[in-house]
Image 1 (spheres, one colour):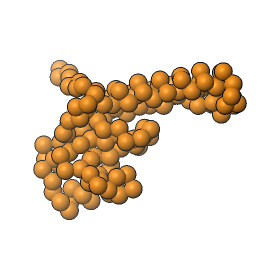
Image 2 (tube, rainbow, N blue to C red):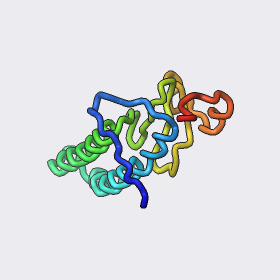
Image 3 (tube, rainbow, N blue to C red):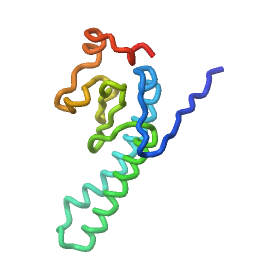
Length: 137
């Protein structure tokens, strides 16, 4: 019989510090939530592309789009992640971020606090080079 995994849900302004193992355990839930939000957003995005910005329907589609994105951001933040952009969320390790962007199928990158997305490096390379504490928790 397998044990159920229960994830801690935090307040929105309370990002947590993750070990690699904790981030990987939470990742399937993060991916499922993000995939569902991404799919939910498709019709609103298509509608926005077809409407004129001055139309009342455009404003309603825009509100719907924004509501979907805000719900996704809220869910990620309550799970303790740091949202950096649309479908881009980071797991704080205490010295940088395990960086993930949908539709990537795993957490495969890391970047320090100053580097940002453009400075992300392959996770395996960082672990081999630096042997950080968060990789062993």
